[in-house]
Image (cartoon, rainbow, N blue to C red; front, side, top):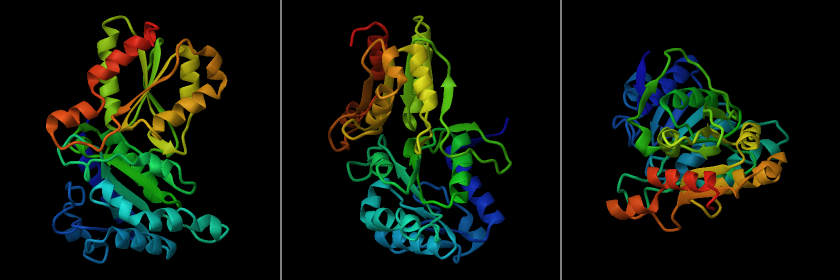
Length: 328
């Protein structure tokens, strides 16, 4: 089977989308001759020219506003925020304008934009370049929020996001760019709003997002050696959330652990737990649901402190054991 890196899969998705539709354009800082901060747009300026691969000044508000305006005008822009943290400078354009326009104009206008947010920690880039902000956008009606955890999903979900007539926040983890996996050559789509069960298990439901999905699968392998069978679930799309597979899994296992890199307060794990305890799965719980998340601090630059602030493999294994052994 053909393998590509997560970075290459995203690049191929952009090529296939731009080849198929001349209305697809790219907007962002250093996405042209430099190829993007993480190499995702490498080679696209030569292929499509500066009218479709648009290098912008250092103005995230300008990038976000240009994407919203271009989308409302009939184009399909893909914005690149370089680092997800910089979306803070474009929140008015994305949240107050892009997310609301379709409803405010009674469906007479669409806003088919994708905003790529390279996020997450683990690179020693410090507090201003290492954040996880996905749940800021989960809170906003009118936006869709996607978090691919594999090269396969990166390509398929990006192509589906570009096709969508609504603004999509596309969250990529920086530590996944070199991760390799099976990626077909065809321009396949992975539908937005479809949760995937990656591993079956009977003892514990483990819901993980983005980089944490790989760690969750590693933890499940380790726990299987102890006789603990963990069911690993990747929502892939956080809004709209396809929650029936999660609820049905908890009914089977009786236990729930949610893992994400963003801090616990206001994090996506709270939404998952709330939906489970408000559903028929509540009567099947054998232990209180647990959330494992980043520490409540700005991400440190120190390698040692940064690792201490983020969920690690041993933390997932520890909390899974506690749940299964009723030690919560």
